[in-house]
Length: 379
Image 1 (spheres, rainbow, N blue to C red):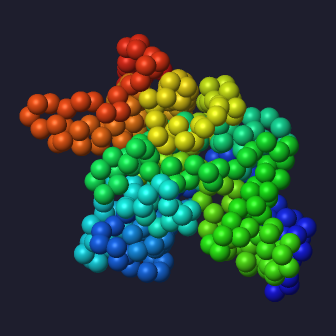
Image 2: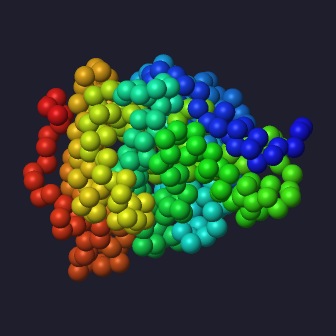
Image 3: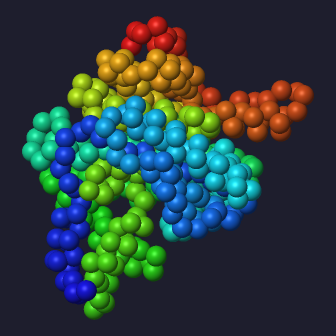
């Protein structure tokens, strides 16, 4: 394998960043946090995709690129059922939470070892402009990502106690975001890859400038280990949602895919989130405050309304539309996220019979308007 120069390394990363394609195919991956920490090693084929071991604590169920959202959801449902049988055979338990015992101030390499999330893979988009253009989709993914992270925050505990974050998982990743400001998204991704430290604590660029050797295989391994909320892996990967309880994984997958791939919903989501590009400390706020942050809450309300309307236009199943509507009513319109339910339970247990104080309710500034009913078909 030939040794790369710095310029050759940049060209290698840029060439593999995106494979332009018309939006429509959807891929989903769901992490399973298991106990005890002895997940079976290796890769196992499932009916549609694969079950991979990411760490002794985390198994990843990865579905194939599928022609449309509902096919992707159905295939993932099949594979999750098969994965749960494998977990049972190894006498493991799938935990409902999204994080193990790692602390948000821990090292970046711990991100993949003790957190469970939901990733959505989408086509990169087309070269050139327009609503289906690669650059526009890259920018929308980055402004939309913290809104979705706040809405689906579900990891507020460490060792059973509130950690000060509604998403410990996103708190671990708050400094790993790509800066999408370059005119060509390939340039943004290349700069991120070259300037992000690997497991040794040294960036590829610094390795080369210090006289070190770097091959294409080295770069491939480095890119595979990077876990930013939005990544370029030939396709677009959005890794912004904490694992949700039960079948709740369907909701972030559906909302993410429809806001990116439905042309009208994408325009509405872009309008609702464009101003977030200049917001200070946005990822920290999404991880700590979630939808108690009034700026994120306002954007989330607009995005979820757009998502529901798009799902209705596309004629997806009533069951899925109702699930999105119920999530929107229960959380988004009330300035809450699933983590707030967990925090309320902790507070209630701590308070005893005298009654709990509320943790994580709507903050001042979150709209007090009445909840909009969505299940009747009105968006």
